[in-house]
Length: 367
Image (cartoon, rainbow, N blue to C red; front, side):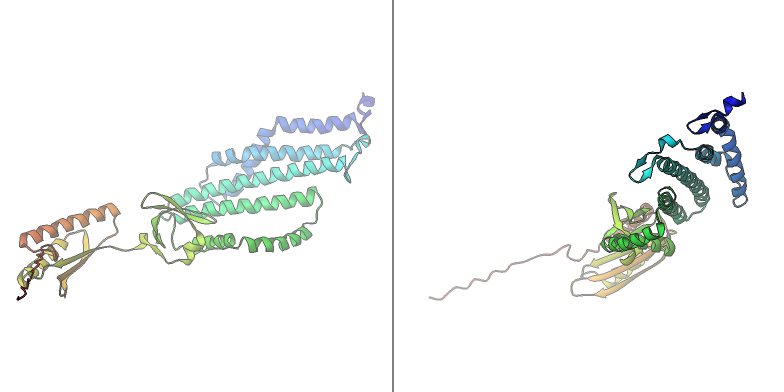
């Protein structure tokens, strides 16, 4: 029996094959249990930092990539125990077949490890997202999405560099030096995109506006629906979807309408010059009474000017922070009440009634 296990096939004994493939079979058989156990250990470490975590969602996200990583890791150890067959020592463009298999195995190992880290980032982002949903500030939600995508990009770049260094034995330092020169040229050609990227960081940290705010920038007015790495998406009053570069959102004069403390309504009346001072005084008093309602926090009405064409009566009123629909309802109600007052006092708007008389003069020539 011992002679059977000591027999050589492709430069390896039967014993070595049994140990290596037996180890792989053992891991495949108990992979679910092992990955669940290690995921539980990782969860216990994470729970020390964040309390009240959902263990089921954590395990659902982590078990599958963790199982793949464990299988790949143990398989590499098992195959490393075996000797590469000498008869397979072929050379392919300065690389032996052994080097090719070794590089493929290293690539699979690094990819499985990066995948595991990406899943952990997803879980951490979901935990932070649930906590951000409990606050009224929507900027936290957008900030979490922004940094989740940003970290995934950084992790992806790190994975590529690891593959180039460990799998293909490239000098990453020299590669980064070469890429820095190329990157400088690319940066000059993509200057506007980099400016938008920097502007996105300014928006997230300075917070001139957040997701859900109503803003006015240049000639665009609407609600901010998404803040991206390059641009901001705004749903306009016409329900169109406008994409504005972040650089313009930072450099332009931006009016955050959601941060105003009050809504302002204006009333401008140009009254006929035939209106008596007594009626003007009565009208001003009536308008003040109209403004005296619970929705209006402060107001002012006055006869502001007397011109050659009309008497000018100006009224301003301010309401608390309410919806646009509620403000428009109040504004319409006030306008109708003012019209009723004008009709009651029989006051005409300037220019409403004009008579134009054309007097023709005919001269008779004396003969």
